[in-house]
Length: 133
Image 1 (cartoon, rainbow, N blue to C red):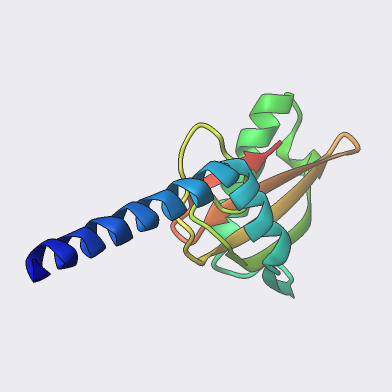
Image 2: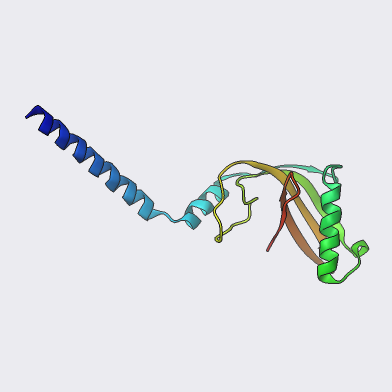
């Protein structure tokens, strides 16, 4: 009799726990969760003039942007180049096509200016950069 009562209690708490998890998962989507995290997370920046470590990245981004825009690399200026701690592995860029790990990722934010428009690039310390659209 004792074992049956004990077994019923375990089953009851398992069902209650699963119902609570299902309720919480149904109340939020990945986009809502990401929006909440990035809204409440303050990105720490350390503004600097172009750091020596970033210079090769800036040069390669300028070359790629000059090819894309069909302008000379001399016509592209660096508006900002700074070290930054991104709140996730997607480097602060909202992605719906892949998942992002919520881990602080050190990297760089580089903003280039050409033809009166600014182009923002987010990258990690290894040099993998993506353009923020």
